[in-house]
Image (cartoon, rainbow, N blue to C red; front, side, top):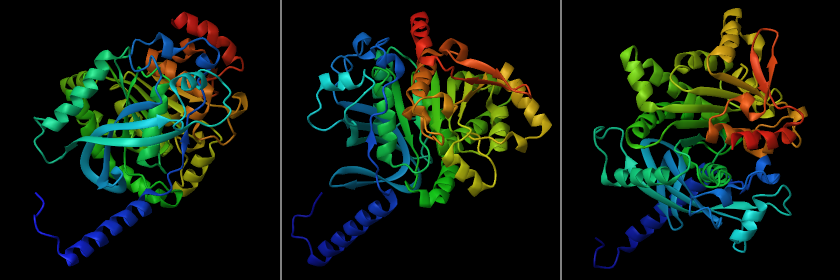
Length: 437
């Protein structure tokens, strides 16, 4: 309760100083929040093959309102500001769960216009995405009792499970962002991806404490490593309380530094009958690494430990990825998303070849010269390329393998099986969509 008497002027000045310090800390640690604009329309919607906004049974989708919500989990330290909840770069062991509300376009963008620009190829101007509200619902202390949830946490999972029950797709998709990201950018990328599923897929953004600046990449690498045990606990929490069919995981760039070791940690925690129990509890479906910024040899070592724990693993590679080129220089080793096979021993090369043919491990070779509009050094291709985003949507929503999605196989000299886009991929889509429907 507030005191009834007037505040002491000295205390008031101290509070102002503390508030100013927190605001300065927020500015310094959050970095410049570069505006996110709506990603290119996936090919099936451009070509009129699919309109998920019309065929959806989800009431939220029918009018394609500019406002959209995504669930989030974060281990960023949070503060309350006059504008609402803000999350800093600072790492914290506590997990915070909530819902973020975002808006597509400016105030004059209505539902009809949003539907039009979401189903056409050309746009006269970018559609900005703005974070307008953050509602933290629950905070989970890792040192608290593990056998029960707080009333706030139960409320969060009740909302999540209600949306899963009403969705046409019963899988929960968790998005783990890369380095150089703010909380805003993380939720914006998750929101636009959910939008192009006809708002049917249930997306949860995991926002780890990235410093949102390329100058602080070392901070991101350190925070990613510290986040691994937090994410392990988060996966266990989801498996116990979220009522999904499968849990699909999409990790972008440095997000792989969290997802891969977390899965390996879980896999190594159980053996024998416990392994089968863990697999049954987690219900892991598709695991997708988009341009993973992770040491190649380390990625393969971890993959070997958990590949039997999940339904399927995909790694999307751009051999000319400029961001991962500089990351490799920094680390002194090639990255899994821009691999140098010469770093591998004959035994490791043989294992990759075997895994790509017989173990539910697909290597998607994103060749910039074959994909219109994809710059040679492209790193963000999973959402900036309409070809690649189309393929991801079909894979995650319909659980289809590469051949069923219209990709073509390529046999490498060492026996490795890779997949790539055919030059006539857009033309093939008509038959593919009809077959999948």
